[in-house]
Amino acid sequence: MATRILSISGLRGVIGDGLDPVYTSRFAAALGTMFCGGKVVLARDGRSTGPMLHHAVVSGLLATGCDVLDAGVCTTPTCGVLVQHHKAAGGLQITASHNPIEWNGLKPFAPDGSVFNRDLGQQLLQILEQDSIAWRNWSGLGSVVTLQNPAQVHIDKVLSLVNAETIRRRRFKVVLDCNHGSGAVGGPQLLQALGCEVVVLGGTPDGRFEHIPEPVEKNLGDLCQAVVKHSADAGFAQDPDADRLAIVDETGRYIGEELTLALAADFVLEKLKGPFVVNGSTSRVTADIAAKHGCQFHRSYVGEAHVCAKMRSVQAVLGGEGNGGVIEPRIGYVRDSLVSMAYVLAGLAAGKRRLSQWADSLPFYTIVKDRIECPASKTEVACAALRNAFPDAEAREGDGLRLDWNDRWVQVRASNTEPIIRIIAEAPETAAAVSLIDRAMQVVRKAVS
Image (tube, rainbow, N blue to C red):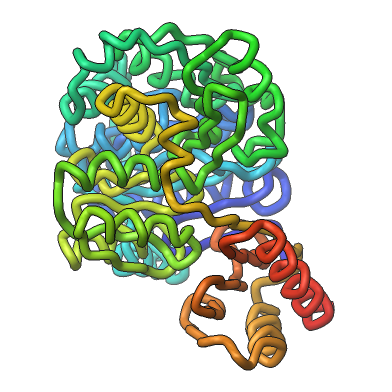
């Protein structure tokens, strides 16, 4: 089996081992068939394999009569914004998000600029499975138009949601780690528009990652050091397609991905009351923040599409995932690191406090995440083993297995984007969280070996 993962959310694979120009072009043609030859916004992150896939995608879209609006290198949330702005039939981002450098993928967008929901994803998969692509003849082929300064539309929408002048008066200094991803197109521009002095790490979007691309603590040592070196007020780290954000405070302390959503929610929900949605792997601190501001709190299955579907159903004012993905429906139903940065800076400016003080004022939990490389088909065995190992916990099925106690929880589930099983545990004390995940990892390893 080639290293290729196809789901309702799109496609990811290893270049040369599952993801090649032929399959990529066919996927794009299936999408073009869905969009009935309409306008399609096309963008990519900075990965070095992007240009090859870009040409294959353009070929598939043109061959099904689509007019391609080529945004070049830009962030995933920018692609969604552009679909709305140009009233396109849909969009397609070439990205593998945080996956290692050998991976790439295709992430489709609906006509409203949101990620695909289950119905649209199933429709696309059916076209691929049945090979019912509507190829056009020579006179019905599409065309390509290059979009100029594609990030500006997105930046303007973000600026409209905060008091930019209040932020500018603080003259923040920020270190932004783009890690040679697409965040370099838009990220520095937004921060400069907010009056920040910006130190950029990995500011060329060429995909030559200077560290492992997932923005977790063990990969961000250089950012932590740079924040201290430059006496910055904050450090921000984006993943390669800039839909996720991790944060470092002014002391050089990694405060993480989980607190990105928590800080944004603390700022937004104080002013804008309404339902708040997170996924089942997100820290309990988000529930505490919703309660603090008197807002309804909801959990969905893990996955951006599931969070967005729940947000729509309850008319949420904010949502997201604990991997640093804030979803602001007024911009679009897609995770967005640009709005995350703006909300954190707006909260600092409004509260007249340091980032470390704000982070420390929130309820404290330790969340620990680990992974085991194995096929998703072994998840059921892993879930059964974990349930048997912890018979005193409240079990919740449907998205792998989540086990809850009154002050801690552990979850095991298959990744939607990689051939791995994820194990996550959280508790009020670090030692308790580590102990819980260590025991869970032992149980799962034994079950899947």
